[in-house]
Image (cartoon, rainbow, N blue to C red; front, top):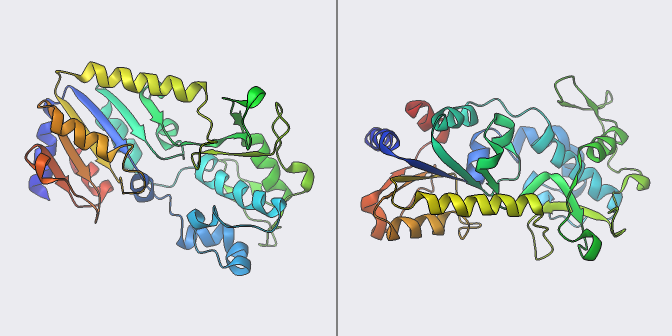
Length: 297
């Protein structure tokens, strides 16, 4: 791994453009654990009643009422979007790595961690949505293309369950330790433009709303790709798996195959891989993202 890290340092030093592709593995490495202690701290009641084992799978559970559904989602959204970020040097080190550089970030993550760390909003494209936004569950006509900030609504749902908020934003369990597993019916969010119940602005099907901000970011990404042509470009893939390979992984491979001025990097513990056709212009590191970034920075 040391040899690969040295190659990466050299590639970073000579790169004119840096394009980061960030997947779920990056946020997981940075402490956004969806199972284990963090899950049980806030969802032990859901685990006991419904047998749910982690935050990800719980998002697909067919809850028996909308009041329980929103109790689940308010907790999930808050701890992954508004609560203090987990203690990790991953995102700060990435910010240092890109300081003063011509960079762009393409990510499938929806936790807003890049922007919260201080990355330039104009250099970020969140393709799959944002935990911090609601949209209509039936977007059409008046609600088409619209998203809605949800922090106030989410906080109200949590307070109704008995949670409190520390000064730094940490979500605090009720003094009894047992939160209510449902929100009041009048806190179920409805779209102000079409009256339909709200839902999360996360890409799940064709109803996902790509709002004006999404399209602006997509345009900036397209423009960035165009301006890298003919310039030494480093593609850094971080924690990208095979759930949605068509967004980051395959386009990065294709760009590497088609352009002689591109170097591809994959840092992914247990899942680092590159096709033989581009192996000569790739740096593959099967290791912990945090450790690798510390070595580089």
